[in-house]
Length: 259
Ligand SMILES: O=C(O)c1ccc(O)c(O)c1
Image (cartoon, rainbow, N blue to C red; front, side, top):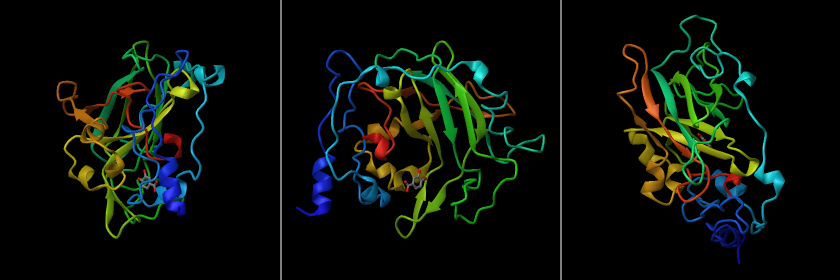
């Protein structure tokens, strides 16, 4: 068996059952992207060479840090202003992203830390390894965070990021997206994912999106424009609900963390 075939064999183990004894639900590997997806080039080196080991959860996976609103700075959930020197803030289409963090049974998860990071309106990240020629915005850092309220609601304000090219195939582009890390109630519930924008044609050309096995799975990562919540003359609102584990779990990003 070649090293490639070996990887394919070990990363396609089935899952999806409730943990024995009522712990966390295992991820359904037919719903989530596989770890090894060669059209997404970096997944080849990242995917494991040995089969994952399954074990029952213990207190250290079923509990986690407790977050409270007073841990946040006043501008943490405002990416338009949290890095800006100018009073107007970052350049780009102003948006609010709001939604709920839900557990495996559809209940809101309170006090969950939601961290986000994204490119600027031109599609450029503030990162030392960033190579795209689009300019940095001196007023945009690209990171923010908030904590869900008692019903599991979260909200942050930002600018809509731009799409950008990346060195995968000869002409691959990422659709506009925002990265999310959601802690949930415990370490074992933590979810890393990406949110896309309703109506973006680039979604259907992206090799990372292409690793998602079903159209339904892809659509679960697309935020819906909510014109009723939109703030006139200010910002459009996008809604994105996130489910931590269970049957309708939001897709885990195709990375090692996704196993
Ligand atoms: O894993 C990567 O190679 C990769 C590249 C570009 C992205 O936008 C990203 O989210 C991941």
